[in-house]
Image 1 (cartoon, rainbow, N blue to C red):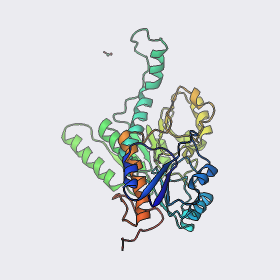
Image 2 (image 1 turned 90 degrees about the vertical axis):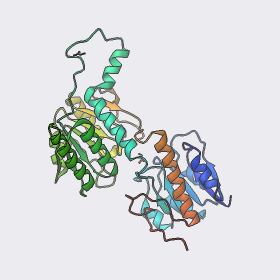
Image 3 (image 1 turned 90 degrees about the horizontal axis):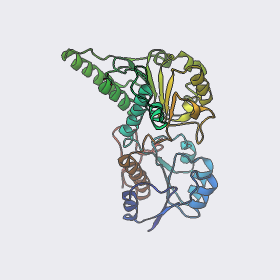
Image 4 (image 1 turned 180 degrees about the vertical axis):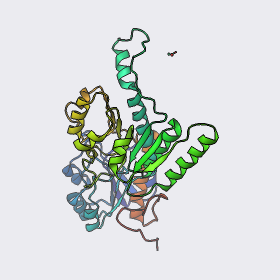
Length: 354
Ligand code: GLV
Ligand code: GLV
């Protein structure tokens, strides 16, 4: 291989490796057992010559790594993730490194996990399962693990982009929930879907579903019964859900987070869960890599380890897209692009090949 491409982790499937090796790239996969690589670990992997890197969301891709990659002759980096809060795109631009992410292939998989957490929280699946395994079941009782009926309740979505919209649609269509959403942009396709579905239900003699675009996030927090967070994490969304905003939510609301942990002030959430035993959360993400103390002790919290995109199809797709991002830049090909994606790389318009 003429080009050296480094992947900081083994990734699912083999297609991504073949794509690169078929096109003059030698692929080096870091097999260090440490879960999270430090900046120094990654600098060592980059070495003296490296044309591109596929990295992970747990890594701090800033000034040091991009200058290191640039010194090694590298011009391409792709996160194997749709989120890129771990990447300083300005630093990458400064050192002439194109940055890619992997949107599109994880939309439905991630939305399905958010839906799973919503249902698991509303029907107290995890608590009930623990009860069974503890040998406590002694026969049917009218009051055992009574939860909420979603039908006719309101689902609130904060951040109605690709994933938020897919989740909203699942909850509206699957469970006949009404929708309230907050986003800086209008979710036109989602609105059209809910309108059409409402018409369909009415024509079938059923209660129609409704939707509303809220003008403030607080409206969603106050009105919704189930709230799912789907914003990007940046300075404006850090601790977006804080003590004050938690207190605006219904006492029996369900809060789901499959975006990024720091969108919620997790310490405030633990306090809120303690004070409001009927309030429930389903969390895929944390102020990582650790959960705040106390969270795992709460019966009204369901916690899973950042697995929202973890379907085989999606993870292989993410690896493939990350490889294509890097390959495209190295070879000067027009890179893969999603119809919803603004540009193929986050920090440049790649020109058509000469
Ligand atoms: C996962 O968290 C991702 O951003 O892809
Ligand atoms: C419950 O199992 C019922 O039959 O109502």
